[in-house]
Length: 423
Image (cartoon, rainbow, N blue to C red; front, side, top):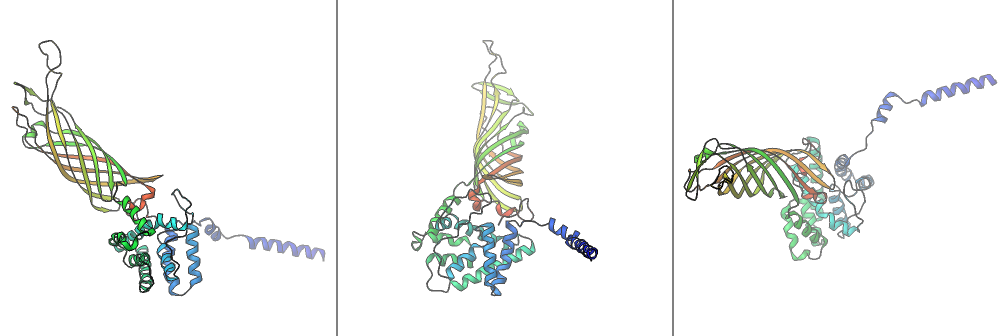
């Protein structure tokens, strides 16, 4: 009997050990699990909420919302639903749950009301851009369809609530926005009925940021400067430039300078007092103010129109080539100057993006400009003419992380760009 029991226990042990083994398929599944990122959680939330609401599964819907908030904190995907639900339950009081789950932001402990005031326009702007991107089919088909359905879901919820008579001005504004997410509504927040509201304070803070130079940029250029008309006697010259300035939305301004060098192809005549000199010396440049406006952007490609005004000049005599009567080597100097107005086109390719306490966007590209000028070489060779300049450019744009909702590049780093849109 003892031997039988021993044999039975041994057999059971071997059997249990065999049963406990995990198949290769299970191992593969176990080791290939990933942690969902912000985009995945946001996408799944947008996909599930309309279905769960339609099917009346309120407990499951609440669990999905709680999971989103616990995992991501507040976000622009969930904010419209939470606000409309609060309005429906008559519990909206210009506040949002302050969940301390933030990716790269420096987070401060705020009350629910303070958190709402600091973030509501960020969520409004994000949602507006999402609606715009979906409308223009900027995402993969499945993602685009999911968010389009979610936007319709939010719109229908808002339409149900806006019929109610007890709504406050802020509640009406938010519902109108979720019905038609457009920035054309923003200016109405200056009206008296919004005085003292957190939403109006948030809008004024947003407006101050959006109309200021929210980002700085700098640019280096290397190219050629080719004059035409009578000025063509100077020949083509290398052109090296640097500029620095700021950008707001599609418009940027900068101050810059260019230097041109290499002797002229042909001699020309200049007059100093009553003496005429033959020279082929050339050292020129330009100092000016420029403006750039974004005409078109797709993915990481940008096309701009550029223009500016400045002061153009050239040295025709360096002042050290001739012996004078005292045996010194210093000779006469001669500078010829002109006002400069220019206009042209610019192409930029954004090649990478880095995020620290600021966002940095580096780009390469090229620029073609036509320069209008008038060199007055009194008594010397006629130098009337303009010039064409072509340059290869390298530059960088930066903006504060806290102003990311006003960043003009964020919604173009999506499915086909170098970075995905963050939700």
